[in-house]
Amino acid sequence: MANHLYQYSILSALMNGICREGTTVAKLLTHGDHGLGTISGLNGEIIIVDKEVYHFLPDGNLREVEPTDIIPFAMITRFEPTLTKQPITLNMSTISKELSPLLPASQNSFLSIRVDALFTRVTFRVIPAQSEARESLSELAKRQELHHATHSRGVLVGFWSPGFTSGFSVAGFHLHFLSDDRAQGGHVMEFDAEDVVLRAAAINEYNVEFPASGEFQDEPIGEVLAKDLHAAEGQ
Ligand SMILES: [Zn+2]
Image (cartoon, rainbow, N blue to C red):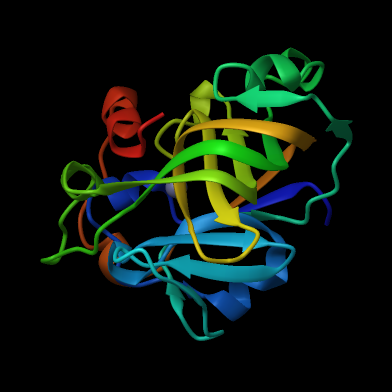
């Protein structure tokens, strides 16, 4: 179904270091063509663009995934934009305004977002893999490496999540970058773009699948503070 969000597991699980088990790439792709996530052991970042799935490794390399690869957290939708804008420039501070009228008219829904542009500068991180079981996303974020691309044609894919979903998702923007030459990408911290095509849609149906057994059910997953989530996700 178009513009219906499917999510596997919750961000609070990653914050508790629960990220070894999960669904597979093949199963995930039955739910859409546009999304983001991570891979088993938090060994990097995942982006789904037009149903192609890429894995950015912590060493900066990028690989196309195998259908059997394990995905412990992902958000995916079948993207059908209802808003298209071609502003000359776009950055993290202007994106809310440019998403008008979806923001604020759909401010308590999720938004799916795609930005095709020439990135004059984009800063992104690739999360380093866990060095031991249950190491949390916050701990890993402390030793993440920031990468920059300049004058790079590429795409941002991701979501805007309303505040009340914090813990399931990270409230606000969550975008992953992929360069058109498929050489670089990761979890976006900042960007400045020109020659932009911005596309978006409101999402009013949200389906979350919890892992039914295994590490996800081992211990209670408590409340995760929004400030800790933002510190770990950098936005
Ligand atoms: Zn991310």
